[in-house]
Figure 1 (tube, rainbow, N blue to C red):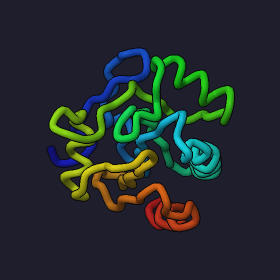
Figure 2 (tube, helix red, strand yellow):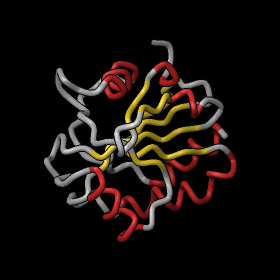
Figure 3 (cartoon, rainbow, N blue to C red):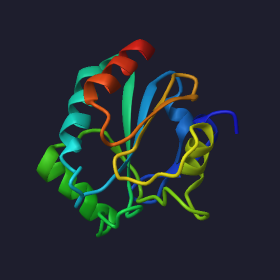
Length: 154
Protein backbone atom coordinates (compact mmCIF):
# COMPACT_ATOMS: atom_id res chain seq x y z
CA UNK A 1 0.00 0.00 0.00
CA UNK A 2 1.25 3.43 -0.94
CA UNK A 3 -1.31 5.57 0.88
CA UNK A 4 -4.58 5.41 2.79
CA UNK A 5 -6.21 5.84 -0.62
CA UNK A 6 -5.43 2.16 -1.28
CA UNK A 7 -7.63 1.08 1.65
CA UNK A 8 -11.37 0.43 1.79
CA UNK A 9 -13.24 0.71 5.09
CA UNK A 10 -16.87 0.18 6.11
CA UNK A 11 -19.28 2.94 7.00
CA UNK A 12 -21.45 2.55 10.08
CA UNK A 13 -24.08 0.70 8.04
CA UNK A 14 -21.51 -1.79 6.70
CA UNK A 15 -21.13 -0.34 3.19
CA UNK A 16 -17.66 -0.35 1.61
CA UNK A 17 -16.06 3.09 1.41
CA UNK A 18 -12.81 3.41 -0.59
CA UNK A 19 -10.66 6.03 1.10
CA UNK A 20 -9.63 7.35 -2.32
CA UNK A 21 -12.91 9.29 -2.04
CA UNK A 22 -10.84 11.60 0.17
CA UNK A 23 -8.05 12.15 -2.37
CA UNK A 24 -7.03 15.82 -2.53
CA UNK A 25 -8.34 16.43 0.99
CA UNK A 26 -6.53 16.75 4.30
CA UNK A 27 -7.86 14.05 6.64
CA UNK A 28 -7.76 13.59 10.40
CA UNK A 29 -8.42 9.96 11.34
CA UNK A 30 -9.44 9.45 14.97
CA UNK A 31 -10.21 6.40 17.09
CA UNK A 32 -13.01 7.59 19.34
CA UNK A 33 -15.02 6.34 22.30
CA UNK A 34 -18.36 7.44 23.74
CA UNK A 35 -17.73 6.62 27.41
CA UNK A 36 -14.17 7.86 27.87
CA UNK A 37 -12.94 10.79 29.92
CA UNK A 38 -11.78 12.06 26.51
CA UNK A 39 -15.23 11.89 24.86
CA UNK A 40 -15.69 15.70 25.09
CA UNK A 41 -13.01 15.96 22.38
CA UNK A 42 -15.88 15.37 19.94
CA UNK A 43 -16.71 19.06 20.47
CA UNK A 44 -13.21 20.13 19.39
CA UNK A 45 -13.21 17.74 16.43
CA UNK A 46 -16.52 19.15 15.25
CA UNK A 47 -15.19 22.72 15.61
CA UNK A 48 -12.17 21.86 13.42
CA UNK A 49 -14.44 20.16 10.90
CA UNK A 50 -16.81 23.13 10.70
CA UNK A 51 -13.95 25.63 10.39
CA UNK A 52 -11.97 23.84 7.65
CA UNK A 53 -14.36 21.49 5.84
CA UNK A 54 -15.07 24.01 3.09
CA UNK A 55 -11.30 24.21 2.47
CA UNK A 56 -10.91 20.47 1.88
CA UNK A 57 -10.60 19.05 5.40
CA UNK A 58 -12.28 15.89 6.68
CA UNK A 59 -12.53 14.18 10.05
CA UNK A 60 -12.95 10.41 9.81
CA UNK A 61 -14.32 8.96 13.05
CA UNK A 62 -13.60 5.32 13.84
CA UNK A 63 -15.27 4.43 17.13
CA UNK A 64 -13.40 1.68 18.92
CA UNK A 65 -13.78 -0.41 22.01
CA UNK A 66 -9.99 -0.68 22.03
CA UNK A 67 -7.85 -0.03 23.90
CA UNK A 68 -10.03 1.06 26.85
CA UNK A 69 -13.37 -0.68 26.39
CA UNK A 70 -14.96 2.80 26.44
CA UNK A 71 -17.19 2.44 23.40
CA UNK A 72 -19.97 -0.08 24.07
CA UNK A 73 -23.09 -0.37 21.96
CA UNK A 74 -23.89 -0.75 18.30
CA UNK A 75 -22.62 1.48 15.50
CA UNK A 76 -26.02 3.13 15.31
CA UNK A 77 -26.08 3.79 19.08
CA UNK A 78 -22.64 5.42 18.85
CA UNK A 79 -23.78 7.55 15.91
CA UNK A 80 -26.93 8.68 17.72
CA UNK A 81 -24.94 9.53 20.87
CA UNK A 82 -22.57 11.74 18.85
CA UNK A 83 -25.40 13.51 17.02
CA UNK A 84 -27.43 14.06 20.19
CA UNK A 85 -24.58 15.17 22.45
CA UNK A 86 -22.10 16.88 20.10
CA UNK A 87 -24.06 17.47 16.87
CA UNK A 88 -21.21 15.97 14.86
CA UNK A 89 -21.44 16.31 11.09
CA UNK A 90 -18.25 14.49 10.04
CA UNK A 91 -18.05 10.95 8.68
CA UNK A 92 -18.42 8.11 11.18
CA UNK A 93 -17.47 4.56 10.29
CA UNK A 94 -18.04 1.08 11.63
CA UNK A 95 -16.42 0.35 14.97
CA UNK A 96 -12.80 -0.59 14.35
CA UNK A 97 -10.12 -2.70 15.95
CA UNK A 98 -7.21 -0.31 16.29
CA UNK A 99 -4.52 -2.46 17.89
CA UNK A 100 -3.20 -5.98 18.15
CA UNK A 101 -2.78 -8.67 15.53
CA UNK A 102 -6.41 -8.40 14.37
CA UNK A 103 -6.37 -4.60 13.96
CA UNK A 104 -8.27 -3.32 10.94
CA UNK A 105 -6.06 -2.79 7.84
CA UNK A 106 -6.35 1.00 8.08
CA UNK A 107 -4.99 1.06 11.62
CA UNK A 108 -2.28 -1.46 10.78
CA UNK A 109 -1.22 0.88 7.98
CA UNK A 110 -1.35 3.98 10.19
CA UNK A 111 0.73 2.41 12.95
CA UNK A 112 3.27 1.11 10.42
CA UNK A 113 3.74 4.61 9.00
CA UNK A 114 3.93 6.26 12.44
CA UNK A 115 5.05 3.36 14.63
CA UNK A 116 3.62 2.64 18.01
CA UNK A 117 0.70 0.74 19.46
CA UNK A 118 -2.47 2.76 19.97
CA UNK A 119 -2.83 2.82 23.75
CA UNK A 120 -5.52 5.47 24.23
CA UNK A 121 -8.79 6.71 22.82
CA UNK A 122 -8.71 9.77 20.57
CA UNK A 123 -5.34 9.07 18.98
CA UNK A 124 -5.28 11.17 15.81
CA UNK A 125 -3.49 10.63 12.49
CA UNK A 126 -3.15 13.53 10.08
CA UNK A 127 -3.04 12.59 6.40
CA UNK A 128 -2.10 14.92 3.54
CA UNK A 129 -3.91 15.34 0.22
CA UNK A 130 -2.04 12.46 -1.43
CA UNK A 131 -2.91 10.03 1.37
CA UNK A 132 0.40 10.02 3.26
CA UNK A 133 0.42 10.02 7.06
CA UNK A 134 2.27 13.16 8.14
CA UNK A 135 1.63 13.33 11.88
CA UNK A 136 0.31 11.42 14.85
CA UNK A 137 -1.15 13.13 17.89
CA UNK A 138 -1.89 11.54 21.24
CA UNK A 139 -5.05 12.39 23.14
CA UNK A 140 -3.29 15.10 25.14
CA UNK A 141 -1.99 17.08 22.15
CA UNK A 142 -3.61 20.51 22.13
CA UNK A 143 -6.12 21.21 19.43
CA UNK A 144 -4.20 24.44 18.67
CA UNK A 145 -1.19 22.29 17.71
CA UNK A 146 -3.34 20.03 15.56
CA UNK A 147 -5.03 23.01 13.93
CA UNK A 148 -1.71 24.61 12.99
CA UNK A 149 -0.62 21.38 11.24
CA UNK A 150 -3.95 21.22 9.39
CA UNK A 151 -3.47 24.82 8.22
CA UNK A 152 -0.01 23.97 6.88
CA UNK A 153 -1.47 21.20 4.72
CA UNK A 154 -4.54 22.98 3.36
